[in-house]
Image 1 (cartoon, rainbow, N blue to C red):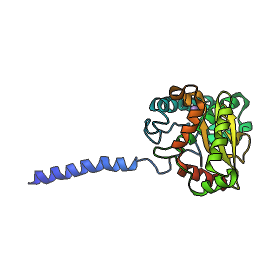
Image 2: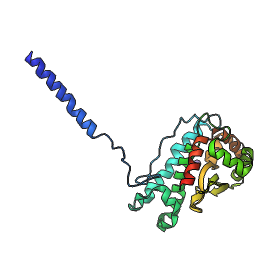
Image 3: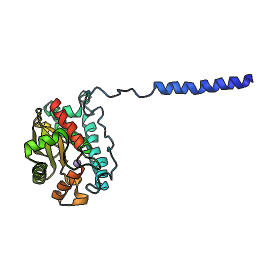
Image 4: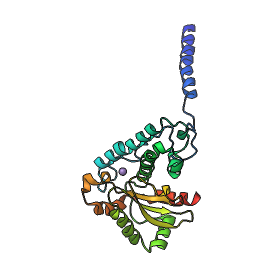
Amino acid sequence: MQNFFRRTILLIVGLAIPLLFACQSSPQVDASPAVSSGLSAAPAKLDPLPYDYAALEPYIDAATMRLHHDKHHATYVNNINEALKAYPDLQKQSVDTMIRNLNNVPEAIRTKIQNNGGGHVNHTMFWQIMAPKAGGEPTGAVAQAITQTFGSFDALKQQFNKAGADRFGSGWAWLVSDRQGKLSITSTANQDNPLMKDPNAYPILGNDVWEHAYYLKYQNRRAEYLNNWWNVVNWQAVNQRYAQAQEK
Ligand code: MN
């Protein structure tokens, strides 16, 4: 009987000690580096897609999503980390801050941060403002602002799609908001973000018109891709960004 008790106590102690260590070494709530908001650059990280690769079918195919996220976006992230290797001080800034203040980035890596920092910020937004079983009419405050500015959702789509179709080569079409909540449509080349030129042009919605975003499924038919893309727009996320634009 004494043996039994001894064994039981040993068993309890044996179980409790590793458990205690496990609790102590569990991740801290705020383990993020010295970046208060935005995308960390210490190091830059690729988050997984917020849904399955096939979730946006039939409008965007799984093969395109896989390549686009796992290869193209991953490359931008890797290039940021490569470029920042020799600049530990810069890693304390968020990527968002860097692309808003490109003149503060050392000239030797400025173009790399413009292209790859822009690519990281743009694609992070892109995955978030799309969702499965989404699309349809805009909702919330942004719906009202769209009607006020463009007259109707159809008119917005027409102007936005034209901005995407007219972008020669690679780039993005954008719906941006200023701090007062006023909307406008713009387009940028390459991975430029509207905030690089105008700190008061916060992108709340953007469509990637690089061929890598649509060519596997749509080949040269960019206009068809632009039309279909509205079926995956996540208006809830767009409304969140619209509110953020007015907080800044
Ligand atoms: Mn892309």
